[in-house]
Length: 152
Picture 1: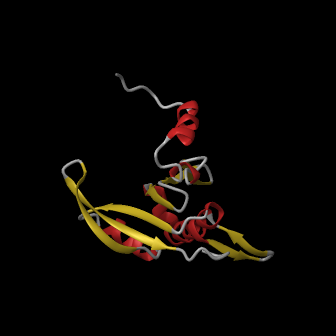
Picture 2: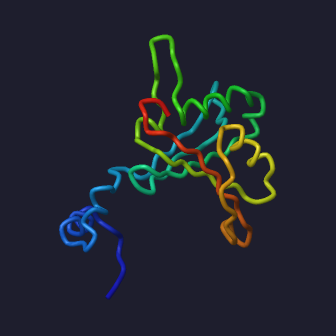
């Protein structure tokens, strides 16, 4: 026996031969979505989403020192990126609505107060502490729920 890199043909095989056939009806077509936020040639931050299943994802972002010059705008853009917003021509869906996310998670290293304030500012609520999540350090899991209606 050996482990090897998963291939699409392996997933297709399992969809037909797994004991849990319903599981493969819920597998997202794409699991990784990574982005960079830039302004006038400066990288303000990077971030993304990783799908856990069709309705749950975790998000991450890391802001650069250049983001401090645009803190309020960065927060607004990230919030709109996640939730969507009302534009002049109507509703513009965010990532969660576009991808049907009902539960969005974020993880913050314990003691990183700026990170905790940021996710709380974005509407996440503390859910659970996880030990040895980042090396030997614990992290707090924050969650934000969406109702599944047309707007997140």
